[in-house]
Image (cartoon, rainbow, N blue to C red; front, side):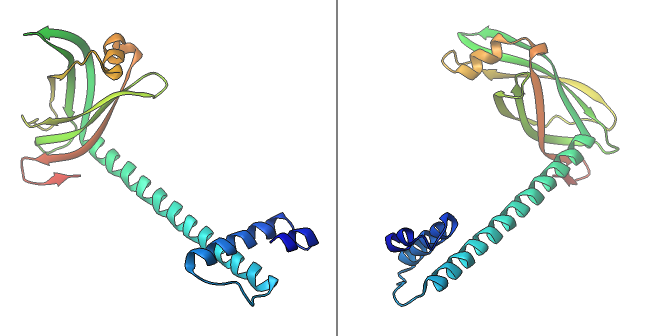
Length: 190
């Protein structure tokens, strides 16, 4: 490396390729003895090409998975709308709670037996403040709306709880990420 660098025969890119080849050879237990400068560069270019190919495959797979997840969530949200219309704070029997009032609407033509998902509260800049899982199993008839009250424990030592309690609902966004809807006819939407 030192001799090649001092000779000026290799530019910065080629020096990086040689270093890549040396690291790859060392990790693979392979020796570079007897190989020409061109062979080392060509092997390094091949390693780099394969790495870029793998990176592209991974990026494509991640994009496809993300698109499928978004389509799944859209399907579930078409069947069921979940929103919050009130948030408060309550103390009961020496325990403190954050209270929520949700509204559910079954937008489909089948009765819902139960559903579950994740509720996230963010600030106006979409920075998550608090999230929790929610399961509802009291049924919801086709085309109907209903209100539902829920609570989470308030922990005065947790920043997320303090921040959520201190914000007015108008200064929050609620994100509903549905996971699964069970219908009374036994079908499941996931």
